[in-house]
Figure (cartoon, rainbow, N blue to C red):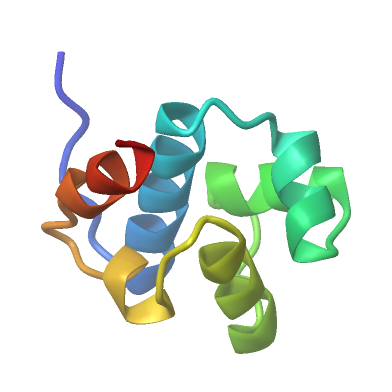
Length: 86
């Protein structure tokens, strides 16, 4: 069953970073380390439990090799992520 489309920027960001993290085969712990954040905070962001600061959101996006605006797009495409892997 497909997840419903996110309705807020926070939901969009949460879903997109979780998706990219899994595609890149990164643990939350590794992503947190790369973004200089705590692992539990990354988990809270992915679950939508917290709204990250702009600085934290940008650090997470950059750690994933993306720009913040990319992971804030409701229709985010994994094409750029997949191309990075080749």
